[in-house]
Length: 214
Image 1 (cartoon, rainbow, N blue to C red):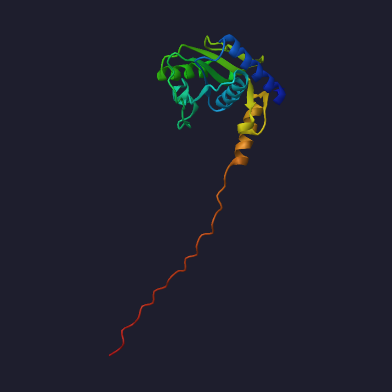
Image 2: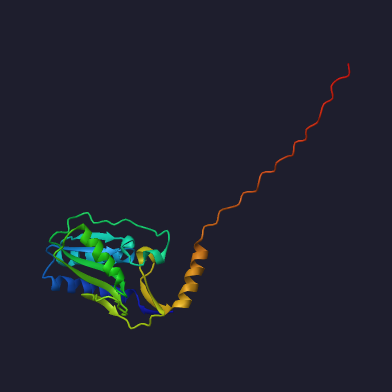
């Protein structure tokens, strides 16, 4: 496993992305951020906080769960875990900054765009990602990128953030090693129920009582 971004690098990347968003859109008018769960929404909140500090004004934030919009839903799980989508504002005429942690094949972004369009017709959608690892399968590119990383398809890129993982870093490792590590972590975090001893059942013996002789 190799660490390719530490806490300070992630912080600098988000600062740069924030300034690029404001510069490209010439301010923050009609600007909203929508993060893709689970890590994209936390990254979106961090960017929103930095925009507020820089521009002196809060912007609207939403969060997407794209599970039901995935084109590989049946391949992923028979019982997928679905979280809530939270977009408590009108998207009409809004400039949406869609935020995710890693840009890979582009299929997650396609699903997110499809879900957004079900909520309304925004003015435009721009994409911000912390990491672009390449290997696109759809014609999708990010407008704002924290770091581009050349990878092999057999490698896994994991983003850890303090809100969920108690640390900020980006690591890259081989698929087989990642699979073993995930399995080990799952076993450690598994909740085991305490087995209560089975109650002892006393066997009742029935005695036949003879009628008194008359």
